[in-house]
Length: 179
Image 1 (cartoon, rainbow, N blue to C red):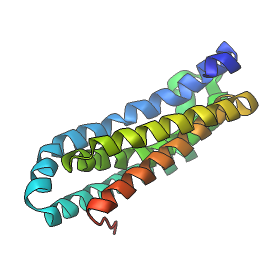
Image 2: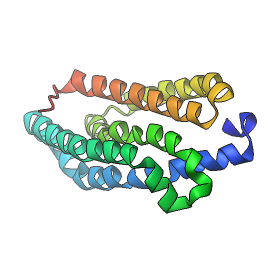
Image 3: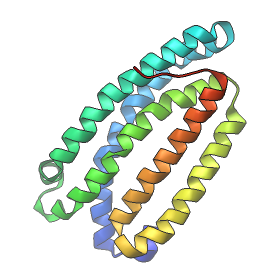
Image 4: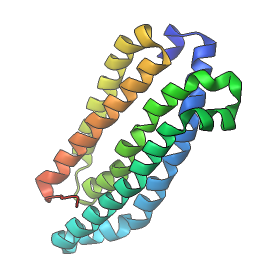
């Protein structure tokens, strides 16, 4: 969508802001994949233990993702300069906004695993459809006004919507508390 509303230069700045954040998404994907067999087994055998494993995994993701977000936001200019050079310094604010998705995406890896383990694939698809549609609408509204920063804001809002809907679906099956 950005390609229709912004210049190639703005698109490059957005790409530079997004690239390091996308690399960080690998962390919860690997951990979520590693614990999924246990999550699937516990979903069938012991929902109380499943609840404990998911609560611990979610707590750990917040303990990892929050410092990454705050540290990255505080050092955004330095990070962008180090990775891409002075030509991309205008991407620092967009990078800071996109970095907030770390706090939203990290827990999604475990919520997704829990939903799948509890045979909630149809619910998961509905959540993704709502999230995708909201992202398109927000992009169409925000990109023409704010460019790459608008797309970053749309991405954060969409991530929050998806995470909240996934959390709600898990709450219907098991109660989750983060300590």
